[in-house]
Length: 152
Ligand SMILES: [Zn+2]
Image 1 (cartoon, protein in one colour):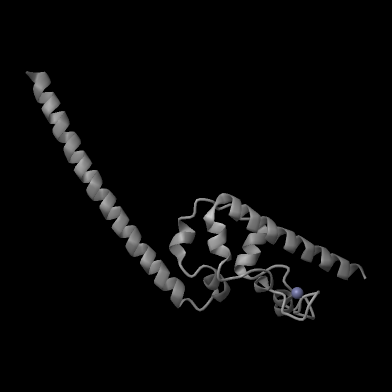
Image 2: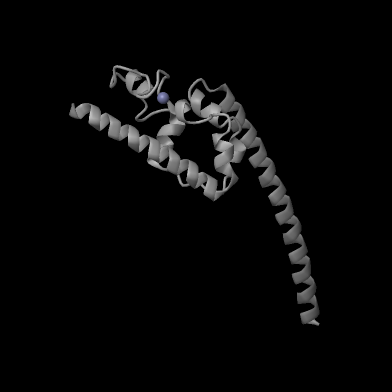
């Protein structure tokens, strides 16, 4: 008899628990949706980070990405800092803001397509790694160029 009651209570408890977990999951996902929307609104209203916002107009795909190995060079590129002549010129560390090889401003935009680079990176871990390797290669060569420039 006790066994039957215990089993009944156990099954009842499991049902209540599953219903509550379902409600909890629904509440959590609703809260996440609201938070994401608020973050997205704040992201659009921000006066800073125009370059990063141009790269990442929608934050949800970026925040839910499966691969995320960020490197020093990737961070520099996403934030429009680092060994780009335009940035170095802005912080008074370089006289010229143009590329060494052409007359365009040397910035991350000079080496990337801002409208699609992030969507390419988010496609797969392999795509992510290829873009990150490309960025590192370009920035390492820029660092070499600056070293050469200082040597003469
Ligand atoms: Zn160039």
